[in-house]
Image (tube, rainbow, N blue to C red; front, side, top):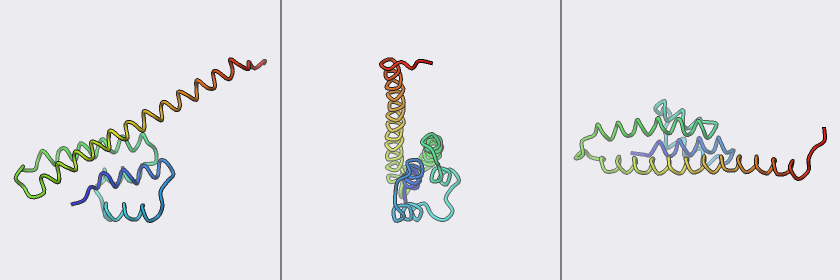
Length: 123
């Protein structure tokens, strides 16, 4: 079993942030496989943080459904629950990233406003 959600999120974030190297991308693609489920593929192909959030939410719902449908004495159940915890942690990390990004935008707006207050532009 692998954690497709985490590797797909890594790919989506690399796309969104414009970072990452070919080896890391190849490793993540190998982990999610040649024909991943549609919600995993959409997450891996996300090109914005908002798209990462939207597709991660879908992946989390799918994973929660899988956990709920699995008998707690089934082989791999503990790992499946561990995946759920890891993906929820990843969701919280993505939320923090989105919050920080929003804060940076707010700060830039304040800087722009302060600049115009300090140096008014005559029109």
